[in-house]
Image 1 (cartoon, rainbow, N blue to C red):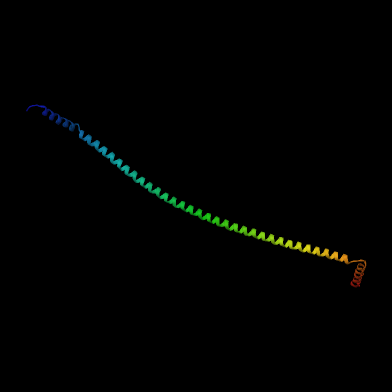
Image 2: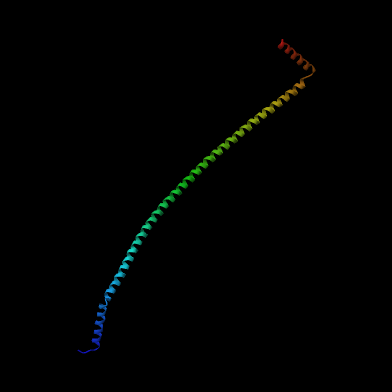
Length: 161
């Protein structure tokens, strides 16, 4: 057997792999690979768990958002309804106030008419009295006055006798 470069290369190759097996390098590599595999599996498990938590949180927030939208719609509807009621109440109170003011105006007009009619009657009565007084003064002379006095005295005698 001759020792040539191929033989030395083969001998070095086998010694290298023998030494590797003797020093348990494949076991160390396997342990390292198993550890890395377990770390990756753990990271995948954690990622899956976090994803599930995120999905649950998303669903919870979507539910809360939907509930908030429903509540907001209910608040808006209630506000619209309340605004309509306030508007109707205001319209009713304004109509009632207008009716009261109209009634007050009609009462004032009626009072003014009554007062004016009374003033006209009083003025007519004053004018009639004044006209009658002027007429009586024009017709009254001394003899007519004496006759009225005698008639008054005679009337008193009859009344008291």
